[in-house]
Image (cartoon, rainbow, N blue to C red):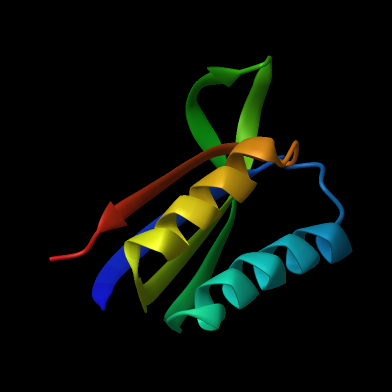
Length: 93
């Protein structure tokens, strides 16, 4: 298994309960074929540029070990989720 780092930027006005449910969904996808090593919620931060006229986002960093199939599934779910403004998944060296 490889180590990965995923950063998700959620809408800042998203309800906390829905955000926690989505993070738990991401964690369950990872844990189906890997392990979550760390979840770090950075909170609301200012964006470098406006995305759809929104200047802030709720940042969450997830470190995990998994297979490339897990990364593909996380990417697919993040793309179809309306609450995720941006996401990035990189392989950790």
